[in-house]
Image (tube, rainbow, N blue to C red):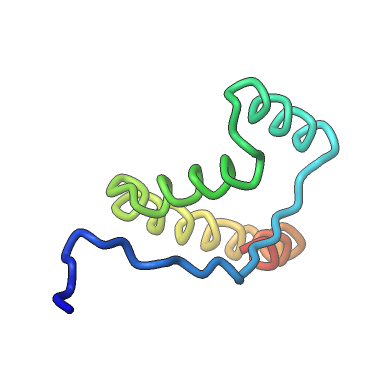
Length: 88
C-alpha cells in the first residue's frame, strides 16, 4: 500500500501545561470560549499554538522577557523574579 502524502498523522495529546489565573480571569476566559462556541481547553490550546508560532513573538518576545528579567535582577526585585521564573 502506498503512503498517502495527504494523510494526517494522528496527534497524541497526553501532555499538560498548567497556568495560574485568578478566579475572575478564569471566569472571563470560560465565558468568552462559550461565546465563540469553542471548548475552553481547545480555545486555550489554539491561542497558545498561535502565539508559539508567531514570528513577532519569536523575534520580540524572548529579548523583551530577557530584558525584563535583567531589570528585575539589577533592581533587586528577587521576589518578582522568582515569581515569573516559576510561572514559565
